[in-house]
Image 1: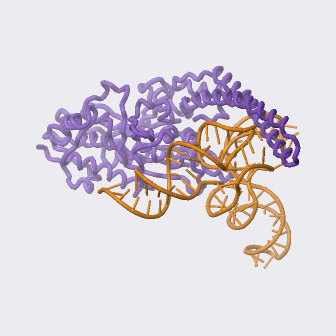
Image 2: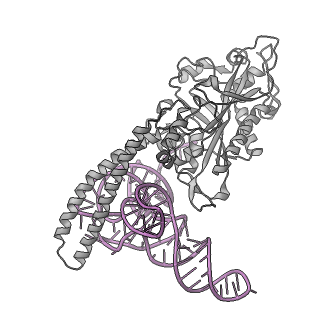
Image 3: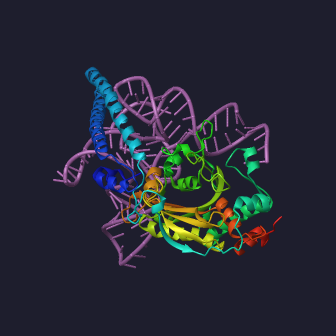
Length: 426
RNA sequence: GGAGAGGUGGCAGAGUGGUCGAAUGUACCUGACUCGAAAUCAGGCGUGGGUUUACGCCCACCGUGGGUUCGAAUCCCACCCUCUCCGCCA
């Protein structure tokens, strides 16, 4: 959430920033709510102070054997008044909390202006799409018909639409990709591998920003604990520091997790219905950093580079795009998307999203570090990025590595994991 | 799943209705002593919020949420978590 002190002191600055997202922050409504909160809190505090003082006098009077009856009567009256005062402050506070939890993060200066993805700014390109002297097939055709390892019909039979079953070489390739990415980040980029729960509590989902606003995007589990299936490993991994106070010398914390992700894709009806691009279940290698505030911008560039390294090793052409104000995620202060070239679509498609959340998630999670300069606990900065989405990487490897006969070339970096140079056409 | 024990400050550990936000120890910080250090002594040392030019003052927080009471760390209820034993299980 946005620093409440900033919100109170400079609501107009906040409103101007959020307007770049197309978000309307109603300053007068906030100001009047904040006003009511202050009045109600002062009154409740005053009554409590009086009640406490009175109760103490009761104790002293009884100790001295004096008649406490008048004090008791006064106490009863104060208690009654307190009930009303507390109801008032609780009501206002709940409204204020709901409002604040619904505010998206402030954008960094450098975020491009714009209302939708057409305004996203291409930062750089890497690699050149292969020229193919045949019409490239898309991954569905390659996987389903030629390699016979990608079975959407089976996925639908087992679960429903937007599920897939992988077999044979395709399943092994999928596994190889995840292993390769984990090894790259742990061995060369300094991340610690973590294994985490795939169900998360509402508190964790509030921490990273999926709740309360985006419940419709999640799969909720029917149980007494109100679990949700994680939409990304960002949720469990980032929440590892929830309610923690970290010592300065433990930062930065760099963690990587390979996990399944579950998304309801509410509102995506009709979008990417073909193939593995948009599924209810997919796996992803997620990289997360917890850093001191002044380090987060540099960490963001570094982390994006770590995600890019995956695509470079896999010899997949891609571009880096800075998301504009209108397209950037709720919790993010700045996001780079990595878009990989897909010959089957003749388009660059998102395969990774690398974001700097600033202190936004940290405030929601109460994740702090002890700043040596002040000696005080202060919010950390959190970042994460896909490094990268395994299902989409599979799609990219198939489509970019395809030959005229439908066989697939396996990139060199993947061969030790996959165990062969090619998937033969059948 | 059954039975039991327990959740208090960085850690350990008192506190079972009344100046308790919480004894004491330890860790940490500052000062004294010392050439320096250790030891010793003195002081300081939680988080969030409100208010104040400031010193300060006030409120909340003893796993979480309710309740009883003039007053709750302390009593009652529900839930969460941890530990021990039994059963079951990958």
